[in-house]
Image: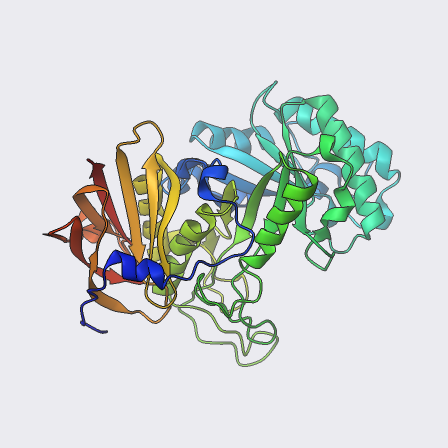
Amino acid sequence: MSARPILRTLATLIASACVLGTGLAAAEEIRHPAMRDFIGICGHTIGFKPELYKQVCRLVRDYHPMGWDLGDDSDYKTTFPMARNQVSWKDIYGSWRKSGFDTDVSLMFEGIKQKSWKDIPRDAFAYGQAFATYFGPSANHLVDAVEIGNEPGNWDDASYRVMFENMAKGVRAGDPKLRIVTCAADAVKSGGYMKALSCVKGLEDLYDVINVHTYAMVENWPTWRRSFPEDAKLLDYLTRPQAIIDWRNANAPKKEIWITEFGYDSTTKPNLKTGDFKNWVGVTDTQMAQWLVRSFLVFSKMAIDRAYIYFFDDKDEPQLHGSSGLTRNFQPKPAFYAVGHLYRTLGDYRFSKVVLEQAGERRIYEYQHVSDPKKVIWAVWSPTGVQRSEDGIVTGLPGEVVKAERMPLATGEEAAAATFTAKPNHAVGVTISESPVFLWIQLH
């Protein structure tokens, strides 16, 4: 930890700033959502506890196994709200709605083997129509959006297009108000966990949102090592969604873009001694909290409309995707408190502009209140990934700082308290660290 003060002027900092990401539209050209409409979490059917997780967001994404509804008979006539295995979707999605959640459902048709589908166009249409008719906004309004597939990499592109087109037509017929989302997509190519956007090109009337999964990898197998969101060494964490943005702008300019999976794994367990994950590298609980919050901040400046954390809960497993939860056996991790604080702090604010991006030093983003433009919050942090903490001076403030809080790692107001010192010429002194500090500013 270094204590040397940073005394550079804002002009000097801006002159040396390095703004990341290519092809980003100027902030004024993008209608950024309020953060309450941006922060989401991936849940899973009967395991999700809405009363617990409504402390961190109001958007939830469910992995909906279509096999529960159809079994192995793709032409099975559904009897919603009951699944074929007698699970009541009304009880599940109804409890989420009662707790204030907007629900996006990933209809995982890929859980049924492709060869088991008797007539893909007919059966996909029938299922989509039945689901939308019961769950859509025009009827019981238990679901707000549906994804046609999660990661259907085991389907060839032509077959996915047939599935997508016909299920989407069924959803439109059942309830045109139910929003349709693609499966996890890539701007260029299909792979084991995504489909190329060429699969849906020309079907713009049949979807509302483009879906992307992205993880902060600096290495894949055998370590699957992840890093902080601002790391220039990341393989495709920001470039993948940016390529989706560029494709959308060129081919489907009115569509929204949702990141429906991103996250980090943190566990208390030692590595496994054998097997595929013996060399796996996780992150600490503190890093998970910091990097999730900073990922939301970094994503919020892009032309992205939502971002969902993977995952809601874990069983403390030392492996890829085995410890991604905001809770561990339903006990909050530090990330739970950090994301909850972000949700409460910026919920009524939207990204306004980049004040400063200086690689290896600091970032400052401005967020403006959605209904009172005189209320502004600056998020200030060190984007280095090495637990750096310095006494710094933030200059060029547009008004008076009236409150400061730091991203907490525990519960309680005292956990978020941060001190600041007023300085001459529209500046404040504050500790700048890997945990963002939020400055409430009343404009002049």
